[in-house]
Length: 374
Image 1: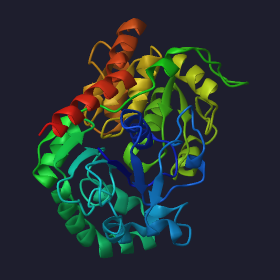
Image 2 (image 1 turned 180 degrees about the vertical axis):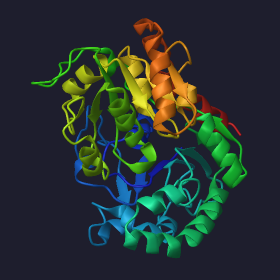
Image 3 (image 1 turned 45 degrees about the vertical axis):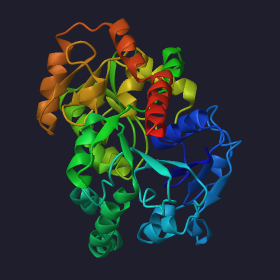
């Protein structure tokens, strides 16, 4: 069969792009269609490559800064998606959390959508994104959100089978699109984090003496809860990541030396920081959440907010514990509970294996086989 792989934009290597790369292994002859193919993604990233797949961009890539910041042209993307010519393709597989599934589907073709989430910024997390936006962003959201919601609902009509990356997202797909979906968790590089790494030079904390926050410093991920809890309890915290909240959090920490910010680290240093942490603090609501799986692969437990994908990746009492209110006080209670318990590194590693790339490939191949026989 002639097959097309669709992805919203290819500008950096994150969870969605790793899913697309894995789909490319299942479908090595597939052509890729996307709104923008950035320079960084034209090269190998941690052993992954788009070599061998023909990549076609929409007109978004030809607009000013379209390849660097395609999300700025979000209101144009429904029209750009429909402009993609998929005539002659028998199977279409979209990797979706932006407006790429609303293609003009050729007669007789089947469309499988691997949905990372319906667009958070126009649906469930609209208020969070609105509060974190500047004046221009707020105006744009007010103007274009009704239109984008309408287009998103319309785009779901082209999908024959939805695949959700978590049960949490499957519930969202059912509520927003009124469609059922198959749950296939995304691939995580378990083997990479199983290996030991080295701590950064001049690292100030002893192994297993600190908590860890890893990820973007954005409002909806709630890094502020991790920082606030560790300041209240005088616990050591290492923050790995950059983002809009970084300066605000640095001001909050001020002269305190029990919270440090590392920003960017090498792959080897990241493994070292992960494996030597006492636990990961995971205070946000994620659709799936790859970081908790990565740290469990490194043998490290998780203290997570008890909503979203973490409920599917962390085993309460075995590989971590949960706090149920989005407050620093609730997180402090969870940390106190965590510190009274014994945690087994082997249990964490075994649990992480459920989310291996091999399991993803096997389950997605089964979905493709079932769909192709219909």
